[in-house]
Image: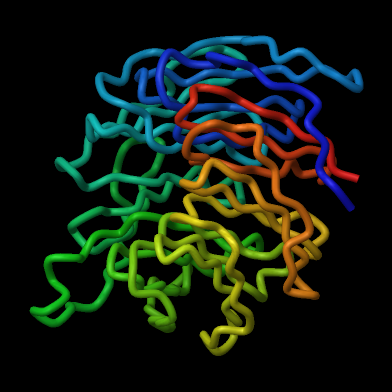
Length: 311
């Protein structure tokens, strides 16, 4: 299986693009940028689809660092360096909710995989927490990491998070390399996993919720066994930080984006790199497979959005 570039939108935003995810309801892409905007892109259905901007949301006053779409495809969420989380109606274009957080207390955001719960999780930055918010902007749950010793305190910062597809687990990645796993229902910390010693900027569960993939500044991706927290595989090949990781829906492959400007495709079972793509000219902050597994999107500091077919 290989990736092939089908579309590339130069200057998709006016500044670096730091996040992208698919809306699996209509196979469109939501992107967030340092230019403070969130955009919705249609890729069409042809072999070489044009990337058309369906809508642009504004309201953030600093760069957008993370975006996500709920499982119904009706609602998007974004977080920004302005310390606000904004929830958007994709069809209505309305602002559904605005959540104000403490300064530097919000990084990545994710919807709960069960859209009926209408919950948004936010990586809690220097508070060493994950905050779970309702659409009414209320904090409904706080997942607290344990205190760290004084030698690591200065490095404490929750950067990344991911729900397991079955909705039972929440993982978060920290500035000091620790990856923590929580029980979503009880809020209990299940395990604190080592294996990295630098910032963990991205997380992705496999579709069966049994493995967790990480992207780290140490230039490695680790695969952790969710059941026992052990490292089951380690992948290296990038020449700089691994900024983003996404798992293919069939669980056999995953992709990474890096500060080395490359996108890599990996075989999870064989633990080998299948392909290296060099279509970006700057750091690749986001990679994302669509639900059908037919396409991969990537975004970069070079302001572009690229779409690849997979097959």
